[in-house]
Length: 210
Ligand SMILES: O=C(O)CCC(=O)C(=O)O
Ligand SMILES: [Fe+2]
Image (cartoon, rainbow, N blue to C red):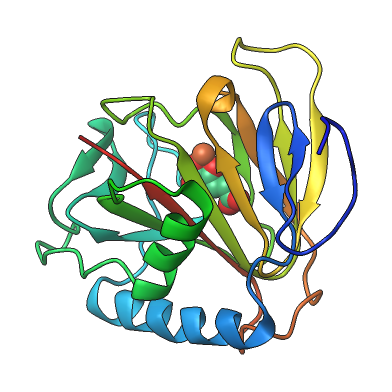
């Protein structure tokens, strides 16, 4: 499919600035099963609200699964082998690994699944995912729950951006030349999905850290 093709066919990628989007990759049953697995992750490694180096609380709450988890505090952004409470991160949900396998076809598996929870008013500023050791591995993102406006810039800072709505069950891949594009979440449309009992949005990102 050519770049900029906005067609929404399950399992067929549309490509925006090199970022591949697979609308409706997970059906409702697959989404529910994944949410159950995410609940188990959150039970073992509770969501926390990271602080930036400058001491500002992020609006998104996070936790991780896998050998490494992403944390941010006054010491900065980094991957850690343990949750801030000291417990080890739980294993990456099998349903998320299955998405990684199917969408990437790689024999290397991710060693971090970052879990982002967007409640009322949460958003994520423009950034690059660049704390990993080797950018040849893609980042795979899975959206569950309320729809979110995802903004895509360039690899360089600034310049024009484009945005698209990510709906529950959509899968997105940042790889190849698009691995380091700036991206962020402008806003979440509250009440647009009934998948999560308490509302809001969960995003999982699968990363190869080292
Ligand atoms: O919530 C999303 O869709 C994007 C999350 C993200 O960019 C990140 O966790 O680095
Ligand atoms: Fe990101």
